[in-house]
Length: 550
Image 1 (tube, rainbow, N blue to C red):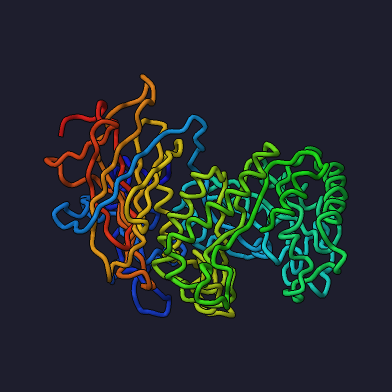
Image 2 (tube, rainbow, N blue to C red):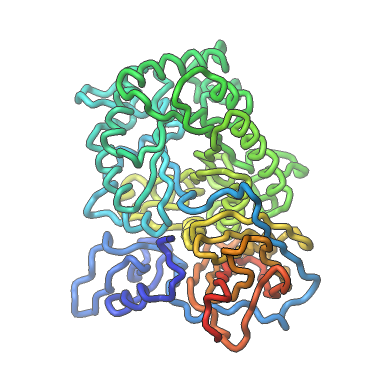
């Protein structure tokens, strides 16, 4: 079951007895009370001392109790509608506990992990069993690992020790996260990397899914990125395979049987170099991909870091093409595919898509698109740097000033998107067939309890488009043990004033508020609902035969 439960508001009602919803703030310097989510504690009265900030989640735009859920009325839907057919494939992928965050390995040394004066654990707990991955460019260039208190070399910007791993492990335990860890390949020290893996196995236990040997080895020498070079121009897939073997031998000495994922690259040649290497215990094929990579591209490029390109159907088609190639390579070698590092754009600094509502909508659609392709893990690259001046694409950021960010974090719009995804119950991914406007996407999951969660992501600009109708046909031929009819019982909505808006709002999940207007979906009877521009909406449909008449 997911952490953000669809069961109606028992937990929220209990929290309502002890919590007062404060004002949500966008930046810490504003003199407003901290935001309160489901895991937050009460806001003090004026006569009482204010509770410390580490007792609260800071989630601007999150409304856990917005009142009854109600889609836009059908009479308000104009223009040509769309039809959606949901089907269950025999080998349907699984969904649940599959999305989360990627951090640079230097963040392992950040003091906010497991700190009693940080709200990081509370915040991460708002994602259902979050994926946690540590790697990034820093692991091969700026992170120094030691288990013997050695002095750090001059190049090191962060020193990571066994105590750091233990602190991160405590958080992973608290939020029920599974972890992957990248080992330093850049400094060509297999023994040190194996020592880190051995301590990680002790710290994380079964929560450590795999280690990786190096981050983006295809970027160790690139003529266009000399600042990232850690090898000479003789570097390539074959020398990489030689290094894999050296590191694997060291792992077998210190942590025999340790599972290894790789290559953590964005190039099919390197995917095959890892998959076809002779190392044992290969756990998964991992890839990285940022769809808006064309930082200074021409106007006819589909990969410019703009809201227009991010929300265009072409970028979704490209995702299916590129990630689909990764799935094919993984399948050829009987490995699952993990998207261990991703985000809207790899372009440096602030772009037109940075911290926009469009980014939040894209996060929902992209995650579910990858799940349909069979991607087993999806980690959005993140940072614990300051909101003001830090990485602008990160779903999380720290509320303090740039040079002293502190230990209090705040979720951005794309973090709300991850929370919305966490509301989808565990189950099998349904294959959607959508006919009509390509600006609207549909996704579905058949829950283990027989429920269906339908996600509609409307990437049209709310300032320029109107609601339209959506005719939904639910799966057929699920077998005698499964339901044949489903009733809309609750829902949740991620919305924004415009695609360019710097703020998003997440409401719910709450009960469907129109008991006299039952919406029933089956393979024989299509349900007609609506979609509103600029919204990602979850419709939770319970098996009709198990639902009392309303």
